[in-house]
Length: 260
Ligand SMILES: NC(=O)c1ccc[n+]([C@@H]2O[C@H](COP(=O)([O-])OP(=O)(O)OC[C@H]3O[C@@H](n4cnc5c(N)ncnc54)[C@H](O)[C@@H]3O)[C@@H](O)[C@H]2O)c1
Image (tube, rainbow, N blue to C red):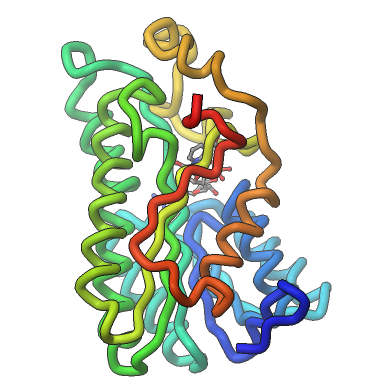
């Protein structure tokens, strides 16, 4: 892959971006498309179709899949669409939701099951589905979007913290197990990013009146809120050959929050 002054060219790459309708996923899909990648954007929100329209208007290319990633059929359909297009298959496992900032004594099964289904099992299923194709091609890069809650206990509720820690395990095990087959897997842990994550897309998303007190000292220590593009550029770097020796890393991208 040519590296153009630090700006990798993704021509010939077909990159699946989950949660592409909004926030970090949208910024990442837009950036990768501008560098030549064919984007397979998947999201439960139909704004993913607008994103692909925008990419095409901008001279890029891609396809949209509207569906819920907790449905294994959507995962299979997404990977099938990407493989049918051809090129080097890469994956950005980004879609996710927040919990309600509750600890183990307070959280409901519903919140835990939802967090695990979307934040852990769907990314795992996606990794499992892309791996045979990457192994056969002897190449492929995977970036998993974790969270500050992939590293520490006070950044989210117990549901999200368990699921996002699980993603770090998924990244490390996949990195180690498939390194010799040419597949690299890394995880980034965003700090606070200006997206729609907390805006209440559905009834089980964050309720700021619940639990926030417990985690607010940790959040008050956050340095600043980032724009989604500041995460997209790191994801693009990790997908690129400029990061060819980075495998199994779990990287806070939080402006220094975790360092404090
Ligand atoms: N924004 C932050 O401060 C922050 C902090 C840490 C981690 N993250 C992580 O970044 C990732 C992206 O979040 P964001 O901040 O861009 O939020 P966002 O809400 O703007 O985007 C998330 C996207 O995922 C999609 N999605 C959610 N559940 C889905 C499902 N079941 N099937 C298909 N699509 C689904 C949503 O429709 C949405 O378009 C998430 O994994 C989140 O946990 C974000």
